[in-house]
Image (cartoon, rainbow, N blue to C red; front, side):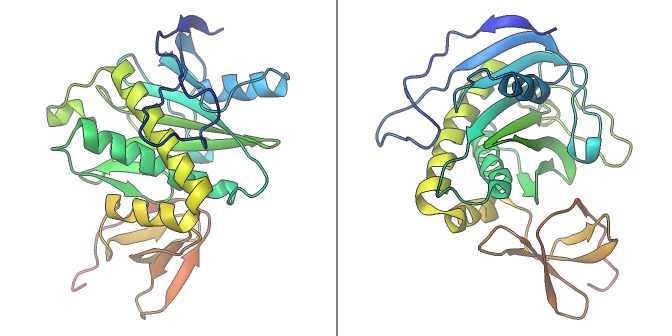
Length: 266
């Protein structure tokens, strides 16, 4: 059972993510709970039960005991880290829901860059933020009807041990961030990124995402298929461009992608 209360950070937006006001700072509503299994699961359950969850509302937990990452990986995290979920309600004319991972990535990377300017954090397609090649944050999207729940976990102070990849924290880089301050900044950045997504399209989000990512030429592997290649940017629709050894480029629209060690001589 989730226990908690609302933060005193209240929205002046009066509307969904997509309604950005030029020259105004919109503060999203943030609901803080002490402990839960999964903030994503909580919001999905509310939506399934017919509860109205306003777009831009955030549910943030002090502790999460049954969190999930992509492909069902466990992501249980402790106090001091950021663990939160929000909702986007899809409307007619919105871009593909799958590209919301890029939207969240842009908001996440810009938040970290603003609050930890000395840290070289890089986005990895489709849903991770890395520090020195180790995972510092991840994004999980789950859809119910015309609503998408976006969960974000950020290792501010501690990193869970993952069996298949290294992890990193901002604290290890000498950056001490207050969780609630981070939540507020991320919520504001998400409002801005959603506005761009709706008003300017996916191509604008891609242009904002690329400067925050690891460099072109970074060796990658598409895990499920065991396909190796090199990062060659993104297509305008948000697909990963993977350059193969022979020089041809393939597009990857979905899948788990990991960094790999460069082959000798490349």
